[in-house]
Every structure is written in C-alpha cells, then in structure tokens.
Length: 570
Ligand SMILES: Cc1cc2nc3c(=O)[nH]c(=O)nc-3n(C[C@H](O)[C@H](O)[C@H](O)COP(=O)(O)OP(=O)(O)OC[C@H]3O[C@@H](n4cnc5c(N)ncnc54)[C@H](O)[C@@H]3O)c2cc1C
Image 1 (cartoon, protein in one colour):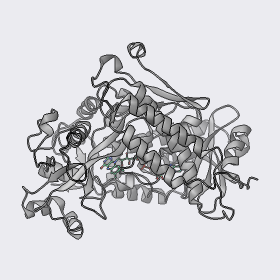
Image 2: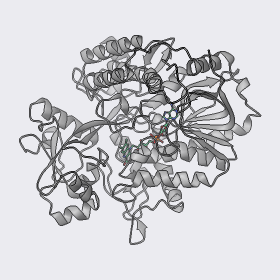
Image 3: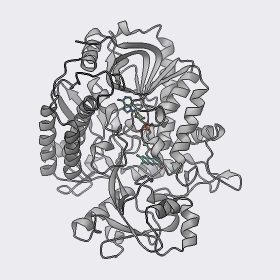
Image 4: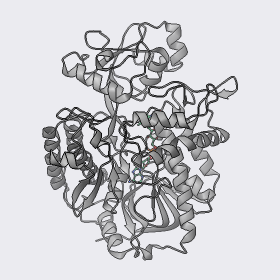
C-alpha cells in the first residue's frame, strides 16, 4: 500500500541547504526563478557549512598582494596533478566576488586597519584565508545566507524532507525528486524545471569523522542511481590533527588547525620527539605540511609503535606563554579550561579523521552535470581540488559553485514552459514513490544502527588513507554482504505516523553502502599512490596515472573506468 504523496511544483528545486544550496537558491531567485529549497535537517543548520569553524581561502590581496592566479597555482600544486582545471579556475577567480558579496550582506569578516585580514594556512604561498572570528566562520556564513533568503519571497524552504531519488521526465531529463517528510513519514514528490544537488560530502562513512549525521553521501548515490557518473571517488581527505584525547565537549574536532598556524604548535610522537622531518617536512617550527603528508606521518609513527597513548600524536603548545595562548585562542581557552585542558602544562592528543571528499559528481564549469536538468554545487561536486584539498578551499567552492549552479538552473528553468508532477516518467516516479510510501516494508529485524557502525569500521580499517589490494578486496566483500543483508524494502513501524529512525537508517544505508563501494572500487583500481590515496602495495606516484577515474552504475553493478592501459596490463 502506498500513501498519497505531498506534491509540489517549482521552477528550481535545490536539495541541501549548506552554503552551496543557499547561495544557489539566492542566485536562482535573482535570475527570476521560483525556488524551493529543501533539506533533510533544519534549513541552513544541517551539514558541514554551519560546523566549519576556521577559514575561507580567497585571493583578495588586501593585506599582501595576491591574485586568483596565485591561488590557482597553489590549488593545482596541492591537487597532485589531478585538478579539473576549469573548476579550479572558476573557484579561484570567482571566490573574491562571493566573499565581497557576503561582506556586503554583513557576514563580518575579521578586519585589521579597515581591510579584510587574512591568515596563513598550509599549502598557500601567502596569507589568504579570511575568517570571522575564532570559531564562527561557518555559522556566520550560514546565518548571513539564511538572512538574505528570509527577505526573498521567491524562495520557499522546507526542512525535514529527505530526498531518496531523483526522477526523470518523459524526455529522460531530470525533472524533480522524490523523498519523505521525516517527522510524519509522508511521501513527497517535487516536480522542477531544474534541480540543484547540493547535498555535501560523505565522511560519515568513516568511524572517526568530522561529519554530522546527514553527511553519508546521499548526493553521490542520487546522481548514480539517476544515471550520472562520479569522478575521483578514491580521494577522501583525512584531517591530520583531529582531536583525540582528553575528552573535549563543545568544540569541533578539527579546532586545532588555526592555532597551529598562529603559534606553531609542535607535533610530537609518543616519545615526545618531533617527527615530521622524517616524512619530508621542513616545517621548522612553522606549520606548512599539507594535510596528506601530515596524515601519512602520524599514521606511520603509530604503526611503528611510536604513537601517543590513544593511538595518535601529541600536539603541544607548552612552549607558549599563557598570554600568547589567550591572545591566539581568545574565548576558546575558557572552553578548554571547562574541559580541564591547560595548554601551558599539557599536550593534547590528535589523530587523522575523515574530513572532506575531493571526488564527486561530474559537472562542468556551469555546474551542469551529465544529466540534463541536474546541476550540482559544493562538496558533492568532484574534481576542483584533485587528489588533495587546500585548507579553506571548501567553503569558497561551496559559495562559488552554488552561485554558478543557481544561475545556470534559473537560465534553464526559463526555457521550460511548465513542469508538473504528472510530466515525470511514470515508471521512475512510481518506483521511487512506492519505496518511500510503502506501508508494509520488510527488514523489521534489522539492526540498522549496528550495520552503520559495521560499515564505518570496514571503511576505517580497510579503506582508510593507507590501502592494499587485500584490504580493499575484503572491504568490497563486506560491503556486498551488508548490502545483501539490507534487502530491497525499507522497514516501517506499524504505528509509523511519526519519526521512524530505523526507516531513516535503512535509507541512509542504501546510499552509504553504494557510495562506500564507489570509494573502495576506485581505490582498488588506482594502482599507485597520489595525494590522499596511498597504496602500500603501490607506493609510487606514476605519471601514467595522472588521470581521473569515473564510476557509474551498470545495472546493479558499479563500473570504474579510466585506468591507463599500463595499469590494466600490470
Ligand atoms: C567540522 C568541519 C569543519 C570544516 N571547516 C572548514 C573550514 O574552516 N574551511 C573550509 O573551507 N572548509 C571547511 N570544512 C569543509 C566545508 O565546511 C564543506 O566542504 C562545505 O561547507 C560544504 O558545503 P555544502 O553546501 O556543499 O554542503 P553542506 O554544508 O554539508 O550542506 C549539505 C546539506 O545537504 C543536506 N542533505 C544531504 N543529503 C540530503 C538529502 N538526501 N535530502 C535533503 N537534504 C540533504 C544536509 O542536511 C546539509 O544541510 C569543514 C567541514 C567540517 C565537517
């Protein structure tokens, strides 16, 4: 039995309300479209954007001379030969315009001597990262975009709606989406002349991550099932100095980075020795080591039995005076004190955590995906950062790509006379609706929470930053077993008139397992080491592998293409 769906029609549907989705909505409305912005969480409070505490990379050049070309050069270098140059160029050239527009909207970028100030970050050749204050950059960006949207009557918004499938029209073009209202369980069908996918990243796939619960890679799975392809899925970025111990409440786990830039916090192994120079760093008290190399160095020390007690490294600011710490950390010092952490007297323990995804949906510089009618923006897009992302580039990417996607979506919507739910391809729409609407689902006995934990363990243990064919084969077998266990129909409580967590976890697993497969399979196919993808059985970076891999669904199976002829032979 299928309950009647709530049906909605709009010019532009935006899925996901992080920085990318909100900027897309604003820009699409500016382009004359009626916009419907939806999110599975609260609008503007759901994904990574609102959690980002640090900085945004942009070549403003207000303090020291800078130009988008320098930003581009650094991004390309960090990407280890794999950046999609058109996307990188767009990111670097248009970031200043977005940052200034946010400034005009009142975001409150930190200023010195009346100009926007910028801080240094690893991999950037000069201070280039703007911020709001010690910990509020992402929240301020979110709040500003929410405020701008609130004044715009052409933007309708709805939280608490989880999209489960994109739907094509009779002409085969993407014409909307199907999902369900999480609180009531009601199915939802949205017809749109253009759709923007802005669903963020996938780091919830890993046991230790900086993600929120809604970052399980939904957008990648939606694009795959609709017939799109993904690029560079093997490149998951691990943030090297995520907080590990002691217990820390009320701060984001990647909080240590800016303080390390400012104060040169020392990384020490379990024997209290500095060790990054063993892995090619010449940071010499300053923090210049890119994320992939820092991750590598810490993992290797732990593996060699020289880790800190909880399996990471020490980060020490004990060489700093209390006054210097207070000046650099501001009110954060009080939050640390509330957690019984006194940096003048003790180091903390840090370790790499899954933080960002470089791979994603294939899109061109208009943010048009391979599927007509579908645009993509933000972290869900693959390619701009190649095999390794520079600090601060993710928020710029979300803003720039969001603005561009919104503009493109509005332009497309103008060309389409009308699109209603009845115009959608009947088979696609019906199957998607039956899945969200079915009252008699299976799988009541499934422990979906335990299955998510198992998947996270598999991904961390076998598909972490250091990979081998044996580990990846094991991961793929385990992912296939979990997929079989999950079955085809979501469970549904008999009294399911309200929030059904097990049902939501079933839909999450449906996407997480598919996306985990794309990461593991792409990693298995790439028989070299590059950036954030390190193969212990193929440690060299090989010139003939300077190419992208794509993955798509061929029937029910994932198909990875792009390996060079040399790799296929070996
Ligand atoms: C803790 C943390 C700190 C960070 N710090 C920085 C930093 O300082 N500088 C920097 O440049 N980058 C930083 N990053 C990365 C950066 O924040 C993200 O890459 C960027 O904000 C992504 O923006 P987005 O709009 O693409 O996605 P998000 O902001 O993640 O938004 C995606 C939205 O899509 C919604 N969604 C997902 N699936 C569905 C679905 N099926 N149906 C409906 N809605 C859905 C989610 O609920 C979410 O609200 C940080 C990331 C984290 C996690």
